[in-house]
Image (cartoon, rainbow, N blue to C red; front, top):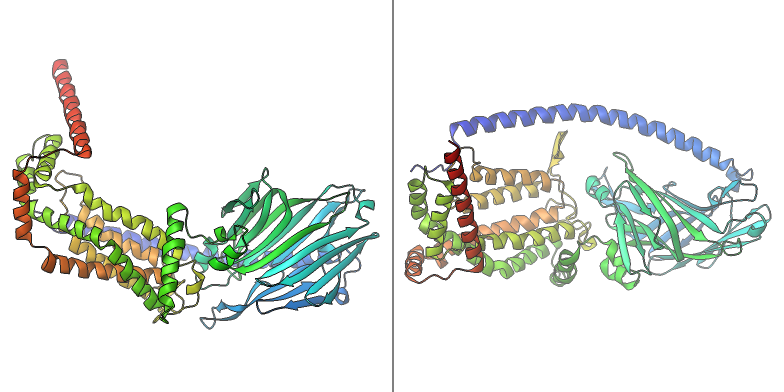
Length: 599
């Protein structure tokens, strides 16, 4: 029987047609995308103009708001440089002194890292006076007074005094106290509405990746439970939030309420281009006592560094998206500690990842050995499988399957054993997918032509955007795709070809998979591509060593023949499969008899 070892003429024609269709779609979407970008740019200009009008209107709410009335105050330590604006008494600038932001003009991380600047964050407390008029502290003018590491912002409204007291503390912490006196004379509200509008600034190289990691995060149930929301809206009407934060890829702005936020809700939307990635709006209530607003809060403007997050003991470590359950445990308990241990030897990040990959492969080597031994056994019994397929070519497919399984059973080959390495690789892959773009110790660390292992490398720049690829080609992603394709070709020799018409050629599908993988890796962290390049290169070496040094197919053939002579005991899985097939065959026979009777 002739074996199909590659692409026949019809498949080559189909593949060529598919390529033409794909290129047609690429050019179509490219033109469509450029038109959409022009529309979005015009919309953004219009929106900026509207925002400017809104800001002017807001400044006119209070007649005391004049350019001369706007003042700023500053506080600094080795971690944070802060500015406070008298309009609204808010934090108007937050710079993390020990970190830098990515500059697209220079293709380097050399800009000051400002989480808050240029009015991208705006917050205040809203309530109504006894006439029903809405009052928001964002519209009031505060007078700043600096004393050591404390700034006191004081505002007056119809005889009521409102104070915001900010105290800069270590560990990226800003204590925030709200004190009022005489507010009970002008309002009968028993709660204030805390409103926070936040535009996430683009700080990293990989815009799409950073945007996908920007979202609401919050804790409740006395800090015991954590949740996040990357969708369009959030709604926590029944829970009391201990803190609410806006998480970015490597940094987070969080406000903690000592007595909690109630009836929380929010919404968010992506910003496709420009300085910002996402717009988030949050609203939640804080209690007032005796119609006075005297509450304690704490701001945290912090890097998402796991030891730092754990040190707060407020469930902040959950903000770091290392994966759920067993996935998160692998990152927290294995990959991060092992990487840190290897990096402590003084190696660069790229070589630390290289050694980490080798260590993982050594741990998985027993499983890989069993997999390749199974492949060798499959090669040995291939003639018997082909003979059975030829014998039952025109027979019932069920009988053909039963004959094939009988050959496997007599030879002592367990096909399910080949699934184990793939199943083991899935959680590891997902753990690493979470590890590389979120591990702050890799941020800004370069290796060869990759300037940041948490972002893609773009050594090859394209003059236009390609759908799903972008405007660049990642060299690490291309190299990884090539070794995966090579590994696939080396391991697909034992795969059976379809014996029935209409069944897909699995070999062709396996060859296409590495190519589609390129689209995923091209915009992913280059550290992930480097890891999988090394991992699959080691796989190829292992295959060669096992095939030519460790495994002897003559001995395997002798072992299979000996297995055939031994009495066989069915395992639970094999027994269940046999019984299922026998029932299916019996049902098929009954249906055939019923059809004959009708005839």
